[in-house]
Length: 419
Image 1 (cartoon, helix red, strand yellow):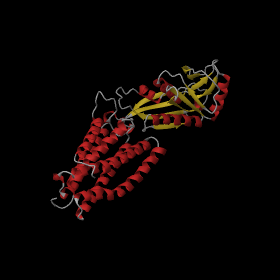
Image 2 (cartoon, one colour):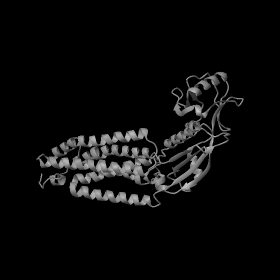
Image 3 (cartoon, helix red, strand yellow):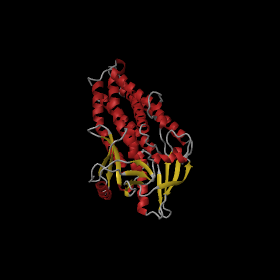
Image 4 (cartoon, one colour):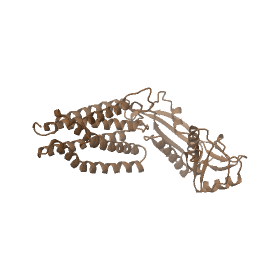
């Protein structure tokens, strides 16, 4: 309390105003995504439908192979934060049907160009100098880019499965001093030299010219971990399931709801209600920024997560405002009522939010697609609820109580008593 002075309110308000400005306004000198660049799901904005089928495969793919293709495509979508998608496997036809939304900056709505976002769909192979295939992409668990601790240069790491580790150990032992080329179908993407036998299924490709080049090679290796090469034999544009005007309706409804909530909070809880409105703006702006910055797809379940977390934010402010009012009406001084009110309200707010936070984490760990979108918006909302509803509001209310004009307990829910 002693460290919070009159200027604290203005500092917090400026920070919130800055966050809202970054969220809603575009600046040419700042290269960052904001609410204007948000990626919406199929249900809101529509997207692309594509049918993937094996390429140059002289047999019908097995159910296990098609399931592997589906899992890899889902992993790529999750990696790109494309959380709204539908992936269906047709085992009879040996095809995989996938639907996903447009990019946030899509202007041409070209379905063929859009499917390139899923990455390479060619077969990855490792070959010796005679062209013999030593192992395939299905043996690659994952590839990453790290910086070499000695040279600080980017290197590409490979992690292989048990079969791949054995094949790679035999291949590197037989090709010391030679090159092992990496192909995507028949296109050469890298040809590193073998310095020694590599055991354990962990390998490093060095000699990268740049970090971008290393990341590109790693992405291609990850993309090529399909059991066979696939191609999009058919693709088309799909319309938003909620209708073209659904987004505008939701935006207007959200703005109206915030205005009505703000009026209620100010009329009923007075000064703490006014501060609560500022805190809710921080929560809404923070959530929109948390969604737009990493380009997480915002779906209808994701919007539900935002609404739920905002509702919990309103509950937080109501609980705190009621506790402050009760403390004032029991005869405490204004300073003591604010301090005690926040202290006693914290346990109720914490219990209600922490259980929801656990649910959000579980949804994010085990969920996928739209469930992951709901979990993400709920998680960010609960975190921001703690920041805005407890920390920011306490700083602002305490700071305003330092001004003589705001020391009347009536402004905090008490009776008209002059201090």
